[in-house]
Image (cartoon, helix red, strand yellow):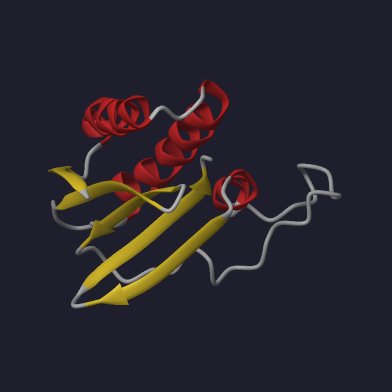
Length: 134
């Protein structure tokens, strides 16, 4: 796997997207799937930047890799433990005014990817998104 570690700040988003975009291009992933990965990555990284380190600064590591026709992006940080998959999906049949705030971004990520996994290991939040590319 290739990886990059950046400050968990919004200002690092472009570096993260360029890193993932480069890996997708080198792997030959088509444009539609690239857009899915980049949209999902933006949502996940912004959440890390905004919430992982509420009272301090920290880093986020992003790793990419391909195995048996599946491209994966793994995000990890040493911020506060948080499993975004533990919250119920929002009820998208309700109007915006009726829905509870939050959860729509990770819901969108889950819809775009074939698999989204979370684990907390060795003091790190690790969120992995996977999609079949061949």
